[in-house]
Length: 290
Image 1 (tube, rainbow, N blue to C red):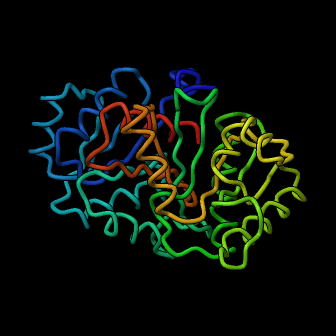
Image 2 (image 1 turned 180 degrees about the vertical axis):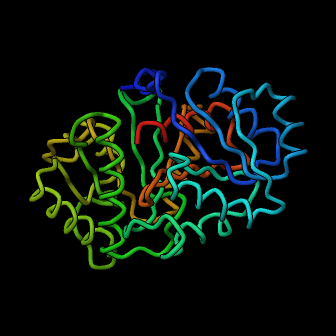
């Protein structure tokens, strides 16, 4: 499966509504306009109406509802409240700080908390790999223990299955394939792999990255693996390693990528200012198949 296959999954007859929190810059509107022109989405914009009208006209965003909100705090509160009332299928970050965007989402009374840990899943279409790769978590969770890694994996599985239509092959990444007490992530990878095997998944860990991606590397190392070279989902030991992997795919391989945050009642779209227009569109599209 490639990104072109994901785009084929979009239901054009029943476009979903995305609530965008404080869109106040041209790049955000360009991504929304691209999705709008393809008939993928309906948009509800929460921000300063005068500025939103100007940017919508400049970028060609035609089908949208604008809700006046004088500052980001008011915008995110109204956008979330509308989703809770059935007005909106996804929540997208505009020109608002990440913490200010996520904190109201996690509010136990007025937010979109579902009881799970929020986590980011990146979807990469690397020219060096034969299918889409799902990577987690390179954007949200900094401090990880086994329980958090378990929740991150569950979120990623839920999303990956919706995209590929079957149970993903899961690799719990580490720097080596053997358990080493000096590398706690190796023991955690082995524990989690066993847990998900019991739950009916093809899962292995710890696995070094070369073995994850290349079956020949496994053979040369004398490693017996059922998923080497055919992994769908990589669960990384920490945010730094996952983020580095994602960024090198973007910058060196020019791989199409997108990302989504799972764990809330609706998908969360958290775009970066450095994202290219295609990456923004990919992320918006991913939210439509959740």
